[in-house]
Length: 65
Image (cartoon, rainbow, N blue to C red):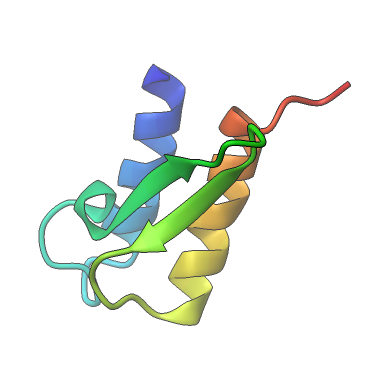
């Protein structure tokens, strides 16, 4: 998970104008009963940041078979 945090921090650093504080504080990852994941945004973020975060979450939380 260390790489996950590094990638999220890099997205936040590249978009420092839009992000106040740590990007990881902007959302939570919830696990559903069917073992899937959902991102719940607690603070407003632009669509392109949400897409980048979603891609990183999929990379680390969704298993590939």
